[in-house]
Amino acid sequence: MTPTTFATGDPQDIAAVLANKDHRAAYQRQLMTAHPDQTVLALKLNTPGPIKNNARITAAFDAGLAAFTHDLTRQQVTTTLVDRWDNPTGPEAFLLSATDATTMKQLAVAFEDQHPLGRLFDIDVLTSHHEGPLSRQDNNLPQRRCFICNRPAKVCARSRAHSVLELQTAIDQTLTTYFTEQESKQ
Image (cartoon, rainbow, N blue to C red; front, side, top):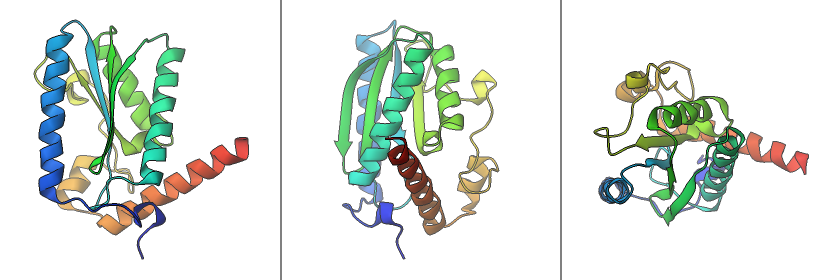
């Protein structure tokens, strides 16, 4: 049975996902060229399977984006939302900050590792002074952990240790718990 989070939406094939990846990369290059002294942050979700966007996924993205920018504000880091995409391939946001890229990568990793929705997020940190996104490894930061078993995520992804259904079920449970807790606080 398909988990609730992934029960609706417009299925995306690999061609659509790859075309969106190319579009994102071009847009990131454009931002770095236009703002060479700024750090670019590109936020998206890790969503396994063909459903990449629907009302629940968008709500999770919006909640995570708000939490991340709130965390940055508490750290006295200013960001500017440059663009927000709501494509069938998934919601995405692009931010600019005058804060150096190394600090931004540390803050992004802290959010990805510590916030209840953070493990769903992929936050790329880019600068015109570095080829490609800054990596955790380049900054001596801990490896991303698997959503299910807590082993290094790259190992599980490469070996396909978990099925799409297992990953979707874990994400669905995380979102249900998160939204239930948020509703109880209101």
